[in-house]
Image (cartoon, rainbow, N blue to C red; front, side, top):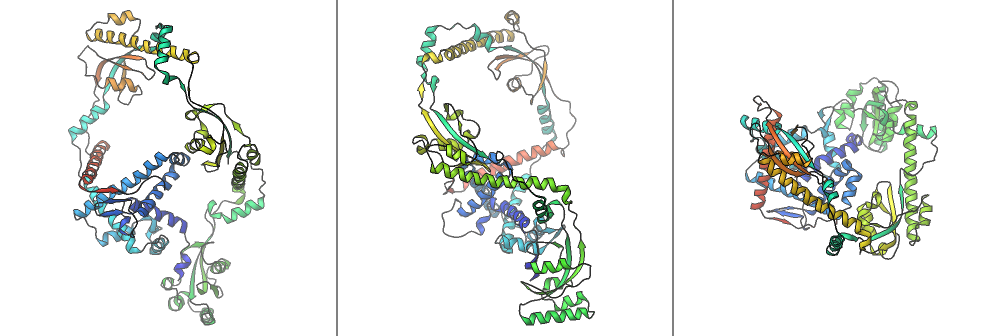
Length: 629
């Protein structure tokens, strides 16, 4: 019965830890062994169905995990319907892959013994207390997650069987010494290069463009000069950081918070007690408890009486002794009596709890080591002010939402209610929006008929926690082809660039041909010169040059190989490869990190190939639309 008293110990932490364990199994696709019903499955893999409820649980678990890691950035991604559908499909695809592996493991006859499963569970940190498996913790955690020991063991069994199959692939791959040495030389190779740059701007400036060319280009390419549909917008934005918190926090409030959250500033006082429990809530049970107390007062040994008279059989075996606990864990009456005892060996009167009558003996006290209030006072006040600011934010956001709805044809009253201002934009295209306005949910709201066409306020839009916005469209300017007079300068720039590219490429082709023939007269006459020689590795930042130079053949002694590429800004580059240098290397150990990397890479490729082959040989049917339901 005292097991129920102790269930509260670390209950939140246990639930979180266990949910992560269950997630690893459910996400791996083994939940189907417990699912039933007649619902349409999310997918069918051979004869095995992945139920919709399984999929939704796996999806929610992964979504929560990603949310905790990426925060607002992930929320923004999920607001894009196409990304959301892709994310949900990726979860289902991985569940299908796991199901394929499960069936292959079963076909191969892979098995694990009950003893292996038991040992695996006993080694799980989630069920460990001070490094030792705690059966009470294990059973309590399973109950909180609605699982029986047999059901959880089946999760573990399937996971271990699948692990056998995957490990067989991973452990079967290896790398040869010659292979490692060749890879080491390939990755560590450097190349000595020089570059000659033909700046695009030089050739564009020299291009002569006529009025007829410009007019003709404008007429032939009207789509390049379209001004997209543009909007004039008004919006009211409210953030938690922007809400000024003017509330004063008294020392009394701070002290109350400190005492209620003592564990956050160190370890609160803990006590270890022994007890004798008489089950029942009637006078007979109370009289029996008083008899036991009388025996104790007469000199009887507490531990011996607990073993023979206590109805809490689990603690009775330990002489009535319970684990360490602090305030807020036990039944209130039991806890009050335990913390009222002063010295080790003190015994309480008969105490009634929801589980019966108790006699409590104080065994040991572990004093609190929490930081003193004075040391954390400022931190607590700052935290309480933050809480007040959050409360104020939500109150103001509710006012903003109500006023924006009640007066849908302007934002003035809504802004006033939230103690903020209306911000207005000039004409701007949707693809040019920035900041909060660029949020996909905001862009979507701007295109709804009631906002775009009727000119009404949008609903309040939550961009992130404690960050909301209401938008409205003041004016829409339709898409149009801009008149030639407005874009003539743009046309001139485009044509000059095109002609400049042609001239630069023509000169580069000529110089490259001459250089490959051993003639550098053209280069000398061009006015452009090669840079000083530089040694580049495969991971050098000059990506365009690196990508070219590592495809050129190694040059002969006292000669160079030449190639042509472009820089990021469009300049034409002639690249001279002068030499290739391999790194000096001794024999690389088969125990090295490189050997492990090669083996893992090969094993991962094998696993991917196996899954692909299993998919070819197994009928896989997707029944679930993975868009948000």
